[in-house]
Amino acid sequence: MQDGFQSKEAHTYERFLLYMYLWAAEADFEVGMPEIDVIRDKMVKRGLVSAKDFDAHWHKALRDFKTHNDYESEKYIEQNIEELPLNHDARLKIFNDLQDIMMADGKEGASEKMNMFMFKKMLKL
Image (tube, rainbow, N blue to C red; front, top):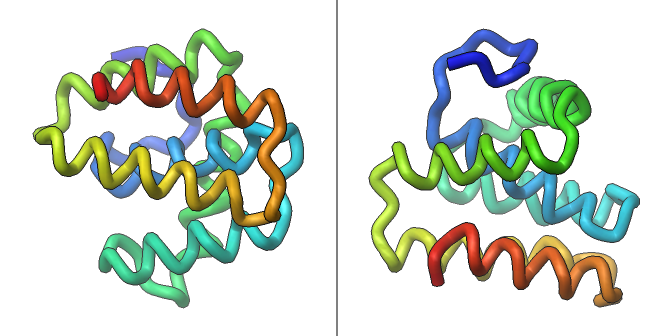
């Protein structure tokens, strides 16, 4: 698959989830420490990355994310939702995590509401 990613690791659940979390964090056009802290906590608690390795994974995801426009990001996420074995409960958990990330700074703007609608559609909820 030609996906525009600079990182050459296989597409994994961890990589997909971090990418989606990053998109949620950037929904208000600014990724701050509150969002990064929530993402780190979620990834570590799920056992997907160690606290020690989080920064390396974060920077790879950020670099990859910045290579995509919105359309490419949406297609990448939709493809992974189709290819990864995500049942309804798993998709709902991701959606709830996305809400937590967007609310990490205590504000919910119009762009965040729009993104939540899009995420709900993409996750087929």
